[in-house]
Structures are given as C-alpha cells and as structure tokens.
Amino acid sequence: AASAEFSPRVAWRLIGVILAVLVVSALLSPVPFPWRIWAYAPAFVFTPLIGLITIFQAEKARSNFKLKMAQSEIEHLATIAERERIARDLHDLLGHTLSVIALKAELANKLLEKDSSRAKQEMRDVERISREALSEVRSAVTGYRAKGLTAEIAHAKLALESAGVSFAYQNNTTSLTPL
Image 1 (spheres, rainbow, N blue to C red):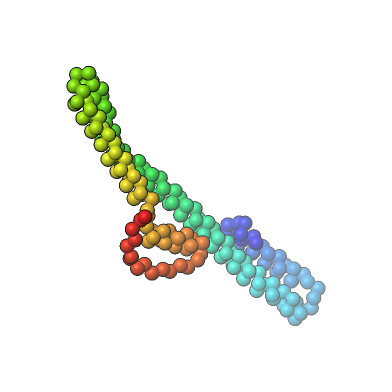
Image 2 (spheres, rainbow, N blue to C red):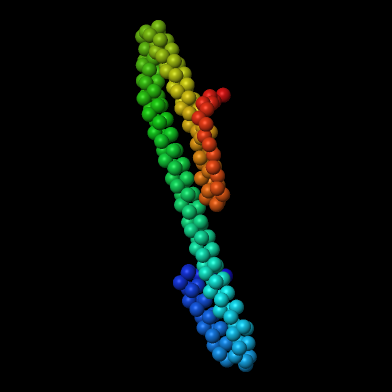
C-alpha cells in the first residue's frame, strides 16, 4: 500500500525500513534460535515480494493514467483541429459567395429605379447563388457528419485498448451510402 501512495524510490526505502525493523525484532526476540527462523522467515520473504508487486501495480496504474490523459489530450486537440478545418472550409466555401451576393444585392438596389429588368435579373442571380451556397453548405456538413464505419470502429478500438481491453476486427470494405 505504501508504494501506491509514494514514488517507487520512497516505497523501496520504506520496505527497507520494515525489513530493518524485522531484523532488529528477530535479533531481540526471546524465541529460541531455531524457531525464530521459522517465525520470521515468511516476513522476510513476503515483505519484499508484496512490496515489489505493489510497486509494479502502482507504476502500471500511473502509466495507464498518463496514457488516458495523453489520449484525452490528443482527442481534444484533434477536435480543435477538426473544428478549425471545418471553419476554414466554411469560410472558403461561403466567403466569396456571400461577397458576390452582397455586391449583386447592392447593384440590384441601385438599378431598381434605372433599369428594373436588370435589377430583377441581379436578384434572380442572388437567389440562385444563395441556393447553390446553401446546397454546398449542406453537402459539406453531411460529409463532416458521416465519418464512416471504419473510423467509428477504429475509434472504439482505441477507447477499448486504453481501458486494457483487447479488440480485434476485420474490415471488409463494403461501401455504404448515407441515407
């Protein structure tokens, strides 16, 4: 239990202190000599053995915790990177289109009194461009949502392995179309 709360170095020192106390206790014991060995031998054997096992388990628990924290950080950074990529894609997708819509709407507003037929044409262009942009955004968002079965299985495998569960799968690449 000491090794779970202390660093391995401190745990080994504590085990050494326990062994030293056992030696002193064995030397000062009133039990006759041949029986003294039988009385203290299990303590001399099992104290370092249990200490070693406990130190190993504590180090394994610390390593697993660090691994889970690192995996959590990687997932967080991947989420941020994906959000930034989506934001860049949407900016690239909509930035130019919205600028064109704004210019055409402004032009249509100026042409309204001078040339109403051309103003109507500009407004039809604004409507068409807006619908195209909306369609592009919908298709982009649909693509972002659909990661695919392979990606989901790989993500599940990573999550299970971080919990110490072995997971094997076979990927038969069957193409599925989203609904």
